[in-house]
Length: 596
Image (cartoon, rainbow, N blue to C red; front, side, top):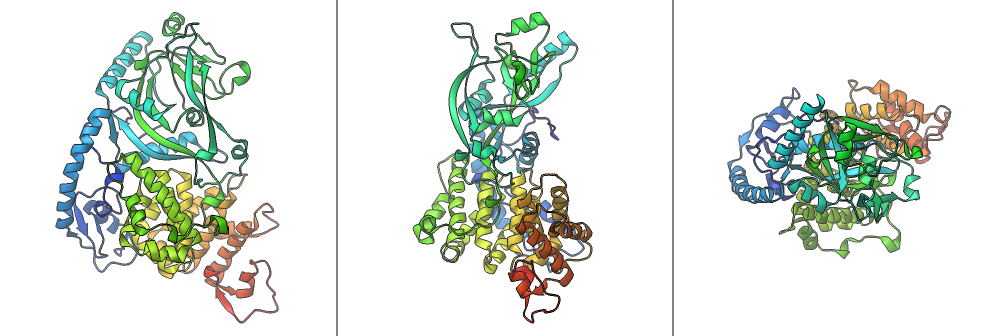
């Protein structure tokens, strides 16, 4: 895996405050960080000066990054009141953050750095049928003593072997063990009374139902149901070593929600197709090697199913990042507005108070992880109550400015699980509700939606497509704002990628066709309509794409007719699922198909 900056670099950085601790009014809507030089723009929002200045240079007319509306002017005014408040708050937070970092060797990343690491993790995890990697938090490990030992060992191996490749791998573990490794480095396992090396860990065995599930791109609301965990002792296949892998499927199966990103000084490595249970550093030196590369797919020969590496001195492995994660079940139901629950399972607005909800968002005297867990739970509940009791939930909760700000901040967080649940809540509140659609655009903003479409997590990207579909359902203003913000080329790129695989992601295609159908009403000729129109004709044709589900075909046809007729089609045809239309009789009653 490659990163634009060295994973093991020990550059001097000021303590970084966790996003969970930043008050919403201090956070720039564009950078998602606490502002240093806040300025007010003509749209009434406050931004980081550099971020808003850069945004305003994108187009000939100055557009609001929040609403997409044309601004009266492109001037910005320093917001000294907000700056003074941020400075006072930040000074206190930095002192506390510095104390935590000295104690734990763990440092918060900036959102930009976090995004880079997340991209590497998603690339390493790849596409897994029915499962998705959700990264909740990434912390940088800064341990000068461990770095010094690693560099010395690397130099020693370089001298002895003539070369010493350094590679980035992953190590699955528990949070407690990961924090201990961050402070003191890795330790080698010790032999038992029989001279055997045993690993004490947790194996994650996926249920058959999950392995067989149709792959989607969303995320389940409960990752605990996705796996059963059985603590067990097992022989270490290559003896007394530190074990790492480049295969995140393996790493996440042998972890308790925590993994370490590590740099490894391999020295001279021995390839292995079968296990050698009692290897030690001394035995490896006798053989002229410093590490083992266990080849993947050798389980039939007594070797490993997944690729892994065994390193025989703890200083050969330097932990650089600690990652909190979840593996969630995926499926289309989690990425679109859901049907109202059965009567016995309905979530009603009256079951909780506004004060209770606000208290869950404003947790005090807790770690950032604990704060995020509380917010994940309350966002999940808001998503469910918006689904089952939308109108009453809107009056009880979404009418409060404080809750709206909290929900908007959660949608911008770097914790993917929290972000996913916040976006789900916004989607359910906005489904078919024009007032909430306007409110969502005002508080989420075009810049965030564009950012979400490029998120490393495919589930977040598809959730963003669902948000676009929902926001443009009844709001011509939102539709024109998103067109002006440049979402169509990004959606077209996603559509082009989605139609290529032999095994089509049908839920993804349905969302893409649906969102593009809404945006095609009034869309300009500068967009790549030829690509989108051709794909819609192909998937709308029952003879050409026989496997396409009806709901995908309906949205593809909707895109075609919207583009041809600017959204106006016979109402009976729309009500009949776009499957029957007489060439003799055209009903007088017409319908705006974008709202059908």
